[in-house]
Image 1 (cartoon, rainbow, N blue to C red):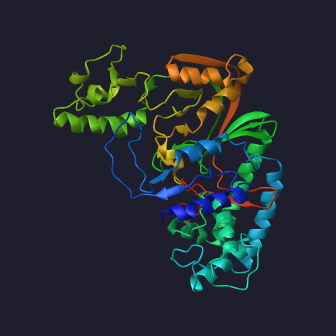
Image 2 (image 1 turned 135 degrees about the vertical axis):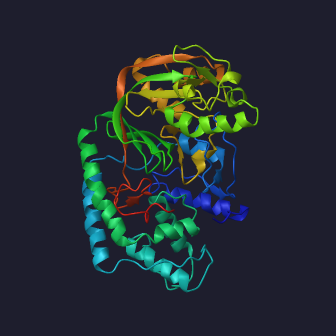
Image 3 (image 1 turned 30 degrees about the horizontal axis):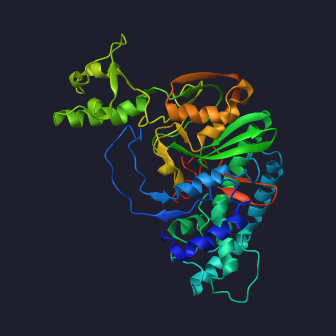
Length: 432
């Protein structure tokens, strides 16, 4: 992915305003590419120990500014989206009957580029409806084409830079027939969710890596999220948030113990070191007795019966807030002390739990009916590190859903990566 130089940032930022309505499901921050790097497993920073090979950095101030703005666009489960999605199915059916769209060459393009590849790009975006303005310069990358590229990127879960990089090319080259099948597969999912949606609820759309707080059909806030890795997927579920844990103790979940902590423990034990000492994790036996961390033998069968905790603190992977809801998967939503992942296009990086950007705003909304938890109080408890559990007076319904394709009443068709390949189309729509 091309790094945006300083002369381009102003133009990209200006273009975001025109794209905002279309990019309602995408945190529109500027993304600067950096090489993928390796990282030693560190449970205090990332319970999964994973660094995506799609590593992106981001502008923290831009993210905070975006999250502070009033949410725009349509709620994913809006009633009007049902008819819009049905219309999109018909429209994409016609596109498929007419032969689909051309494959865009693997050539990076940006404003000012020229040549046959630009002409193919123009044809591709015209067929999908992203390019609406005619031009007499077919092979020239003009401002109209840049706007169309941003429109496409925003509606496909990519940062709307207007630069046609490798990730954008892969998304452009998902066949029309595949996109049609996604719309057909997602329509019944959308219908089922919409039928049961109450007046106030939280929707986690896993493929969109996004959280919506909805009340009376309106979007109160949207948040970038981090969801489960491909081999540790976030489950589809329905529940209700009943409790918030401020500055929580981290109880290491079974997946993290098995796949991260134990292997690291064995490796460090061979080197004469203790993983528990290094990362400040406490071990407990079946009777709840705290053990000497230097005495834990990671090769002994009895170790599998131990539980592990980390006390609250600025390095706790839960951050300052954990959102609790009953479920059979031992997953929850939480803050994080390391927020850099929120700026990536690809945020499938957890062990199944969902990390929430701007979680303070979500917490204040959930606690509104409690009557004594204004935003200032939440900010103060974050600052002081006070340990506190708060039950909601009225549980907030919660949906972890899997929606990769839908349309909104303005005619925009939204697509997201088929992260866990649940659409029955193979890997073709999950490779970007």
